[in-house]
Length: 188
Image (cartoon, rainbow, N blue to C red; front, side, top):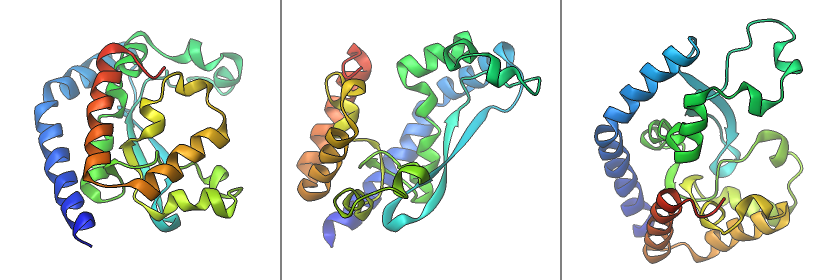
């Protein structure tokens, strides 16, 4: 299908240009993460992609490294996020390393967010449809107003909507609305 081929070329070009164009932010993030909380620079999360393929999703680490055996259980997650990590999360900088996943073909610029393995294990046939396409950096859920208040069923409905409606026009609409959401804080 021509859409898939062009979309893959688009993903490769955008991911490469995105890494090059944001390289100063990568350097700043690496330095500030190391100064804030020395340890690994990246966080790797196990995710499920197209056709139930497992992969490791890259993110900049935004939480403190647990130094003691019980530290993680004593602190709520919000207390474990270091100051630069809070900024990275708010500005979505922590997601920049997912451009590497796009280069590798695990992800796309636009598509349903990568699924957690424990969620996929409980999917209904309806929800399974979201695995028909490559997961993305942005999607309908990412740009939805008050996205964190949406139910799981509403989120899945948005992903299935994308699977059924995907096109160049839909992808471009999502991309432009993603920039607006990041710049103006919409979608939280």
